[in-house]
Image 1 (spheres, rainbow, N blue to C red):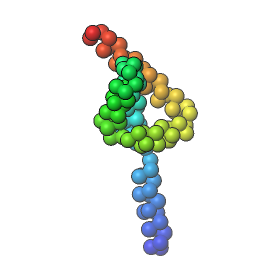
Image 2 (cartoon, rainbow, N blue to C red):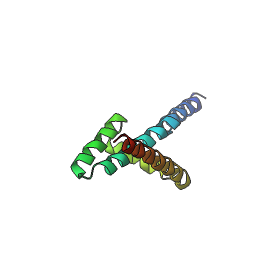
Image 3 (cartoon, rainbow, N blue to C red):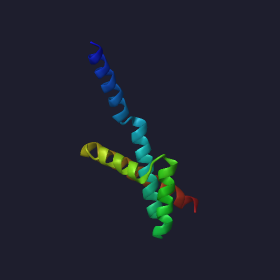
Image 4 (cartoon, rainbow, N blue to C red):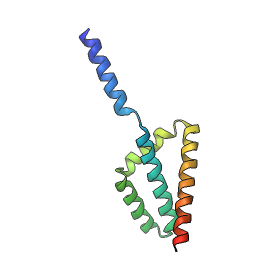
Length: 102
C-alpha cells in the first residue's frame, strides 16, 4: 500500500512539474512578441540580438528554455497556430502604437 501511495504522489508531483500553465503560455507569448518586435525595430543584427537576450532575461528564459517551450507548444499544431495569431496581433498593435508616438 505504501508503495502505491508513494508512486501516486511521485506521479502527481511529476505531472504538476511538467505541465505548462496558462501563466507559462502567456510568458511564452509575451517573450515571442518581444522578440518579433526587436527583430522588426532593429535592422542591425547585433542590436536586435541584444534586445532578444533582454527579452529572454526579462521573462526568465534562456535561449535553450525558450526553445524547449517552443518545441512543447508546437506539439499541438492547432493550438500553436492560435498562439501565433495572438502573438502576431499583439506585435502589430504594439508596433502601431510606437509608430503613432513617433
